[in-house]
Length: 435
Ligand SMILES: Cc1cc2nc3c(=O)[nH]c(=O)nc-3n(C[C@H](O)[C@H](O)[C@H](O)COP(=O)(O)OP(=O)(O)OC[C@H]3O[C@@H](n4cnc5c(N)ncnc54)[C@H](O)[C@@H]3O)c2cc1C
Image: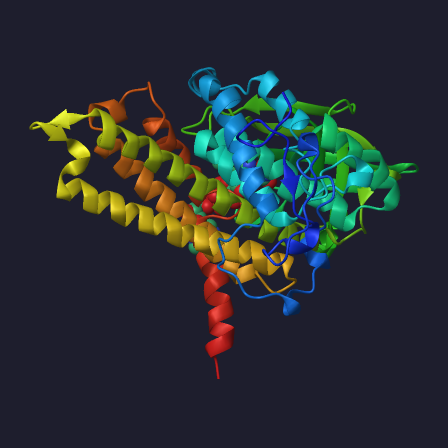
């Protein structure tokens, strides 16, 4: 079931140069890969474009949001509860994500991807999170961390080898955190040493998202511990490599269908072709990838908040009556719903502003940190209120209300905790305001 517009009809898209809604020239749309011809926004000279509202989507992006929303509601929503209870991603969902092009937003068409812009990936992550934040994070890690790593730092050989696979059938994982190094990520202990044919990796990684479904692992290991973080190097490791093992699957509070595991590397031999970029540059790559990834987590959190809000709003404004009227008609309820929606919109503005700044080639590091920080706070607050607005029905494990509440907590933890985002924001501000 390839994606089409919400109407189910084939979609005509504007040319790629209209990504910020300037003039449009309709073009044929191949639904399977969303956009056959969209160019990356980085190619656009934004100086010549009329400024538009931050959350104004191009026609392409609007179609995309509708298509993904339709697929998520039809194919994922019926499975959300079961996947959460079983703590397992349905393989059919993963398969369909590839079929729908959800794992290849920014992969150029020549490598089998959709050739879309970064904001499209953000739109996709957000729409998926409205239905299931677990499915959303699979899409997020795969696209914003793993695919981006090859696009930015991979040799042509690595691109030719991996991008077609990552676009069609191979899930990716990003392996930085370890038992003893979380926020202090570059204190990692996993070691790499040179061998005749390449490298040998020894160590352990912890908290690795997608690890049960993935075949591609981007692993950060220290090739020269004496040089400290400047020895950190990035390698591509496949699951079938001797010495690679998944040691433990975590049982979690939220995003339970998303796999999170401990991975051991025991004398894992990596051919020299699987070095990503240059030796000793891994810390720079990780920082840069996580800066982009944070916008994705911001989008996951705004999608979650919106999904939780909409679910509760439908209930209080359509279903539940007390004292002879719909509970959503009480002013005490209406004000809370209005306040929460306003905060969601504020968070979305931060997320899409960060995404557009990245596409425009501007410095977006602080914006990404603010977007992730605030979106996760809003997701936590709104999903908690949504449980209350639904009373007992919000508390039971039937609808999505309690699940969204549990899922929201992760936004303040992964890809840099809230304190780490605050540190990043404060550092920039201090630099600016120190005389
Ligand atoms: C479900 C899940 C999925 C994950 N997926 C991945 C993945 O795919 N790949 C990956 O590499 N990692 C992943 N992580 C790891 C995640 O990025 C780390 O958990 C996160 O960076 C925090 O590290 P920590 O858990 O060790 O917490 P710690 O670093 O031990 O932090 C504990 C507390 O101390 C605070 N703290 C730490 N340092 C400071 C400081 N300098 N100033 C102020 N406060 C501070 C933190 O904010 C936090 O509140 C995942 C984690 C989870 C839970």
